[in-house]
Amino acid sequence: MTPAGRFAPSPSGDLHVGNLRTAILAWLFARSTGRDFLLRVEDLDRARAGAEAEQLRDLAAVGVTWDGAVVRQTERSELYSQAISALSGAGLTYECFCTRREIQEAPSAPHAPQGAYPGTCRNLGPAELEIRRSTRPAAIRLRADVTEYTVKDVLHGPFTGIVDDFVLRRNDGVTAYNLAVVVDDAAQGVDQVVRGDDLLPSTPRQAYLAGLLNIPVPEYAHVPLVLNSDGARLAKRDGAVTLTDLGLAGHSAAEVRDLILNSLKLPRGPLERALAAFRPDSLPREPWVWTGA
Ligand code: GLU
Image (cartoon, rainbow, N blue to C red; front, side, top):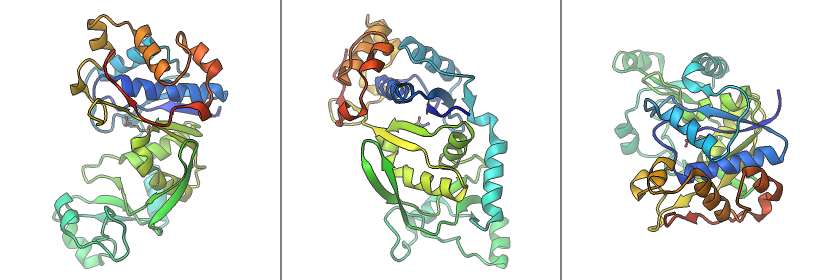
């Protein structure tokens, strides 16, 4: 398998300039290191009809090219089940019946970091399990034997974050993002993960899980987000932020691509030109504040 980078959007709506900027960065990181570039549609959750086609159209319009067929997570449940079975076979999972509210209200376990699952269902005996199973469907959690883990990030350096008994399969049967992303990246030969730095806190969980599944940990680069003028993460409600809306306001896709490249201190024009000038070390490390086109 050719080593690859990837962009993995959730098809919940149109991509905005922040998403497009992350996609361009992922493309630059992959292409500048001779990697393939793959697109994976993360449609396990939050899929909106028609969004995938619009996202692919917009990525192509700013010059992002990809190799091979687009992969959809909803078509890969077999792979996720195999990984969960392997973990269960090794005694590394357990059933959890907690509601969100029960988790919030439970006293946290001694020494557990804030926000970690308190371990309520970790050691249920057979009789108790029996009773719980008759009340509600179980989620499957990882039985983690660490509380934190350190990853290396190209832009952030070493990063240590929480690893708790996180969910692998939700109680509605849907595979959890943290499991799917690890399994998919490995199955697709992705050894470079470039994505928004809002996902950095989830990365120690994913790298730890990769180790349990005997999967090599990819290279990570978590790139700065795009913010609105109030300093909050850019969102659809921040006005014309998608190619469609910017187009209606008279801005072409090439113009938007150039604004993005300019924000990265890269030459405007086709992405190949930016590729020739791309140096990860020279990337701006601060978020880009979007004030409109
Ligand atoms: N699907 C995730 C998102 O759109 C990205 C996941 C990833 O890149 O690992 O936020």
